[in-house]
Image (tube, rainbow, N blue to C red; front, side, top):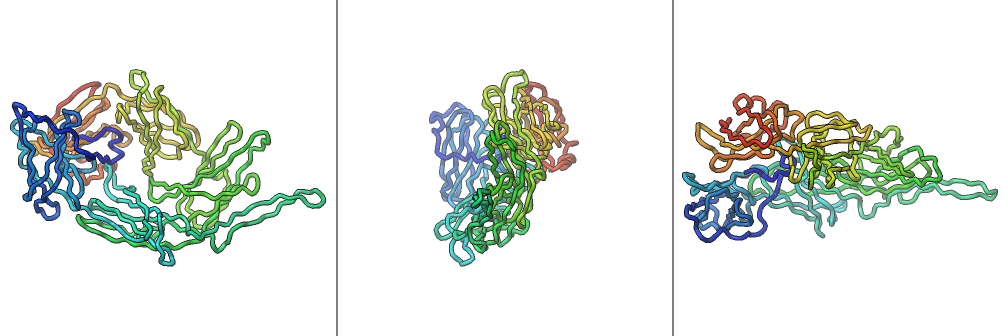
Length: 555
């Protein structure tokens, strides 16, 4: 069963049904079948009673059926019409899952002649949890503050760390993350500042002396000893994820991660820039500060700023860490933005000439017949950091990144909507195009043209092991030049009859491989899939073609 096409390579979908849809037709068809099996605890193999098991027909809209397992863990769906049925299960204390789920992929049950769908074994892992209490240096609870959960593992073929969840502490400073799968996690708290903090703000006061001369005096408000912030704090007491203690969860684990926040002196950054020098034009200058907690995840910080003289801007109340400082300016009809990534450990003085200007992005998305791509969105993902930028495409096909600017780096380009994942080609000014990615220098604006393939092909087939169909394996469509064409990859998981479907394929040459143990493979890394390609099936996809292949499963 393949997942939703929208950014399937970028995002893990959560598509469990929230309510029971209309039941399947009550009248049994002339050729009806049974879907049955047992639900067991994935940890000890014991049957589970009172599990809600759900099937949904993909041929009849909003048609589905739910049954509950008996004391022996068994479930039965009778009088099932031939077809394709996603199967999911839920029980309190266990992770809600689809059958043989891996990431956003699962194995659907194919009901039909000569197919055994009555002896399914559905293993549900007990859910795990992480909880704790956040206190300050006086051991008082830190209330209503954000706690972040990060997970480290394999996502879309790469080993990475991503934000999993976020909650707020209660009035006792407590938090809890429940219903977690086995894996490696990190807990972090971003509390901003102590309630008693007073940031020192420097000001320049203009006055006139007795002779009429203008004089300036420097003043500062706030108590220096109270100019404090809480740095980002990872369990157990690190200010960076590199020093954080990983929390390894096994099925059913309930781990505790308490944290004590300790304030540190707030930092100040002074930015020097050249004023417009045009008194007839109003000038507006403002900073935007974010902190990188993990690669690809930036948290916006509130700023306390003062402009005590033209061309000098002071930002107060900053925490130590890896920060991105972006200075926006607007005078008259002209606007600009400069951005600098800094590892801030002390007060800093920065000249605008030291900060690289950011690039704007605009362009058009068109179908390969020249018509605009309707109801489409565009996404760019920074290959190094994982940062994602998204723009909505207008009915004319035009787009621009509103309020977002590009830093230097290599970005994969994706489209979503009815034309999801069918980027045929790119062309650009202000950036170098490599396959379906662009390289941006951040020194000039980028104009991007995205051609979406209207005549996409489709590949279906069966995964075979020793000549027999096999379910639950990962099937991958590998483009001819994979390094700059992540958008051209397709994946699926073989269904109960060994079948798979790879949709929306841009015309070109590919290799289809089936991997029995591919779900733990970091296939995104260049070269990892290379050893599997000789045993795969090489195919050529043309516009609107529908190919059927049989692929031998590799270990």
